[in-house]
Structures are given as structure tokens and as C-alpha cells.
Image (cartoon, rainbow, N blue to C red; front, side, top):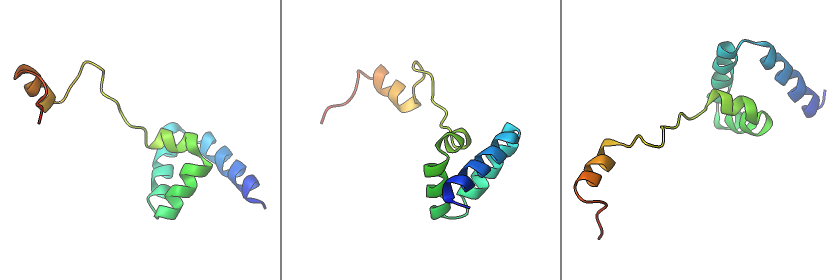
Length: 78
């Protein structure tokens, strides 16, 4: 079996799982070793992004330190 055929078979298997189970499996596989993480990130970018998506804050929400500097008169210059 070629690497491409194997990747297609793995992709089909993961797509047939429910989302929660798929995310758990991808995270477990990627955490096994740095090589496995690179392989999954390169071969299955959509699945990797789904499992390790970064939650972004809304544009109007800022961290406490930025709010404090804003109230203190802006960013400090050196």
C-alpha cells in the first residue's frame, strides 16, 4: 500500500467518526512524538486544525494589562 493510499484510508476512517472522538484520536496520535505531530500536520492539515484550533478572542476584548495601559495614557515609549 502506498503512502497516499494509506493517507486516504486513514482520512476516511477519521471522517466516519463523530467529531469528539476524532479530535481525541488526532490529539493522541500527534502527542505520541514530534515526528507523528509533523506527519499529521503535513498529511491531514484539516484534521489537525480541527483538533488543535486556537480560540481567538473577539476584537474588542483585550487583556487586563492592555486595558490598564490604555487607561494610564496609552502605550509606553522607551
